[in-house]
Length: 94
Ligand SMILES: [Ca+2]
Image (cartoon, rainbow, N blue to C red; front, side, top):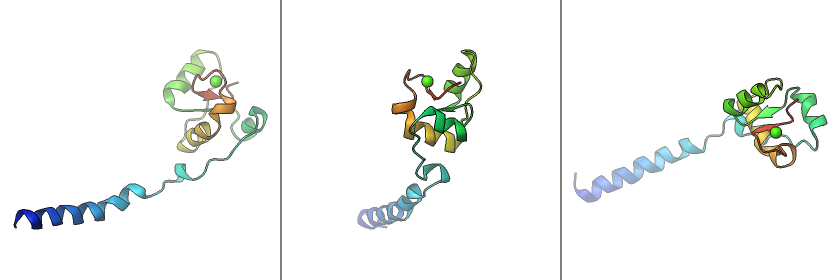
């Protein structure tokens, strides 16, 4: 294989592989907007956290364990600007 053919092969391989990075997962589906913690906690009673570390911190601080499923994390990132006022990584802890 000449260097040019090797390059073409590499480019073709990348072109085939690239779409694999674009496959959407369920967590990527648009997360719902919640205008208030009152509304968010109807769906997520303990609030939502950006990850397990933040959830553990909420529990250490005396709150119920917030949800950290992929969907809950997506909900966190969609709503944290309004609903995680103290920016501790959990929205609507209670
Ligand atoms: Ca918070």
